Length: 485
Image (tube, rainbow, N blue to C red; front, top):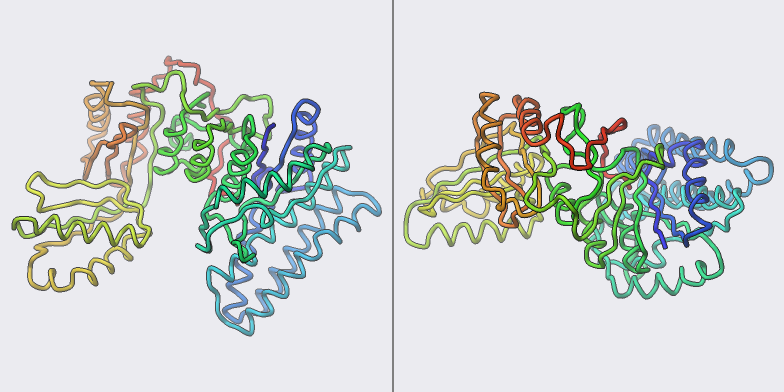
């Protein structure tokens, strides 16, 4: 069995839906297939814009956006389906369109928007695209069957970024999809969404449709999960910076999670973690080049051990440094409270450093979290700052975190020397640095103005033009992927 997930760019237009449906048909004779689809590209953003316009009382903008969403879906349907089939598929998506209009009309009166309310509307794009995709499969002679994921993916009530109850989801998935698969159907499941046990709609957060795919793969014990997108696979670097970046034929689950954490956007780390838990291989494949093998993510990968596999850059990073009065155990107590607060606020710390005297610490954060963290520090340590117990608090913005990745990097004793020699060739100062305790990464922060030169220099050091480990395929298609949902 293969679970195939198609992202927004793979179902963006009628032609792309035809192409994606044909890919399913190509494999359906030899495999049982479950399909997961995102909304048409940019539709989720437009639904969010509708919700914001409605909550803000902007009826004119709202009605324009609603009209655009309806017209776009009707145009795709008109192009895909002739005659009466067009009317039938329009009827299939009508309930979702009407639900969106009713939702926005209610928001115009309510003038309020919460994550829980948003989770009612945001999955409607997936509900429409899944209906269209199921009909496209039926047009090819397959038995496409629409499945609403809220019936099978059971989550907690953390609206906007829900986590799945895997045991309940496994039971419901097998109960719902098992009979469909046994009778020769191809289930087409809405990505990105689920529901609580109380039937409250939820969404799975960034990369949610990928996560839906790997959850279903794990629940059904699929042979593989294929993520169809518009890139050739996972690359050794961003090819907009490094024109000689190449596709990695294989990487480990751990490497994929680390790459995602430090900026690679092809697949989200949450999606990888569900596949890793059940040892389900994941492939990243290009729907525009279906014969290209792409990247396989698995438990073990030849060529990973002790070798640098990729270099990433996380822009808009910030260094926050605290210097604490040097008194016994005082620093430990303050830092303990700080990290507890960061965990409570769900703040990602890219990496951290502490002095040997234990009285100073540096945290490298994502830029979008900086003001929130500074506000928390001010509230949490107001008296310590006022009394001088925290002697200084410094903030350095406009940094980029550069990371090199690979399994068991400590087995490469010359790594740090080669890495920082490559950085020094650019005449760039390293603001902060750390080696991951998991042996998967070495990270450092530099001025964002210098990052392109730094990444190119590192990539040239570890991936010279003549270098080949089977990963020397060059990417010919790369788009900056925001999380597809």
